[in-house]
Length: 232
Image (spheres, one colour):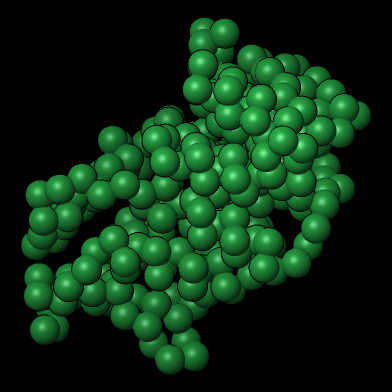
């Protein structure tokens, strides 16, 4: 199965799961379907997929419980699927490390495009002009999808790493939340500005006391964020 990119679909609606499976297999992916959260976790432990499409509402274990369990040991990309459109649900999933969020009903072709976009980023098939950045105490590598802070590897889901890389590669430049959604999430992502706030907070929490190194992620009141260097 690993000869092809392997996608694990976790959804208890057989019609949706079958439709998504057909579209993904047509695009050359290997696909497996799990209808229960606990079954999905067992499948993940037996053979980790390259990407998981994970419904929120599931029997056995709900999607947030599955995501939390996956994130204890793995940073594989996870796209959440949900029939609900409350901001709270989106923020909760993103806070736990989801890479994207698709609200049902969704267009199958758009779903495939998002899967491909996430895989390109996380598997490094998009070669950036510069794939690593270094600052005092901090190194960020897109090639290895790795962040090191004060010599230690920092676990970061892809979206957090990409946000940090984008800000750091445009040091001292201010970006609004909307600009960050467009640049980091891409493909006209219809996200909430809270999505950016959640990710910035998570990145900051993983880089404590960074001001002593002469850089930090600054909030500009009512404007946005910037990676500021040269000030202590």
